[in-house]
Image (tube, rainbow, N blue to C red):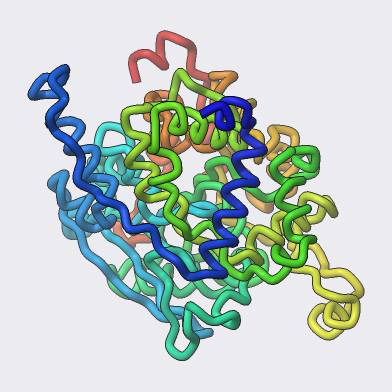
Length: 441
């Protein structure tokens, strides 16, 4: 225990990286007895039921988690142009309900939008507001770990970044939703990398701008000049420069449930490690539900996705992946990859960001906002401690963020021919909410 007391979040991250490396190299598995002692005499029957429900939620797949809470759920699969087989989860709306597509961030999955339950999570809120909700899963996470020819245990499967997610995954899933529902356009929201990939798609494949009614960008991980000094980013960058780190193709697929739940002290240390990455906010963190988070995070990513983000941070350029000079010349006809053209993103885009987000600095978000082809509004969350993951996990996220989103969505007028009117910044302008209004939402 003395060792854990002396560990800071950075040290714990290094331990996790080492653990990930060991698990990858040895292909070992921890066999954990999941049966817990229910004989805690201090628990009331209600507390015991709540604990068992939380434990169950930590193991259920997304479709079963949705079904548990009484929502109609479906599982769909789609194959990309380059052969990756992706899973989508759907909370089916009533006949004729507007499709709303949600895309997760790095190390996340479709679980991110349902994991905190019907009283908090965005997917349930949208379903309650009569949307047909579709949850995407990017290649390489636990729900999209398949390919028509490539073996996910092989190196070649993992030769992708979020560039490919934007170029192939999002278009394949969006086209599938449109074909399945018969709609011409969908609503879209993304968190973190779910924004990154979206802007890649709309800048590189501009025809997809016409398929989106409006984009709700939650903590968009796009520009990152202000993130360079983040200690975790520096630690991971150094890790990739080691002999072992340079050979890693897949990351954060290991099960951290055992490590973080050994004792109450190690659980708190893991939470502090998360805060060290995304920003500290104990007031909005539901610690009781941390076992659910551990059951669904991390969901697995390609090392190249992380490396690509580090390139953006170091160069200050939102651009495709940079290889050697010779390979760059072959791929891009330039020594360095050209920037993505954000002015080509003509989807009306509303941006949500926060002051305590250690991964998406407000200055970077505002710079990105100015470069977008059709920005229609931005909203700085009125809580100074609000962090990167609070957009999904915060106890009061509905009041602090999603109430604003529903007001923005309410400004869009739908025609009978299923083509929505594109709003202008003036149309979508919403006065800042005061404290009384926030309390009433």
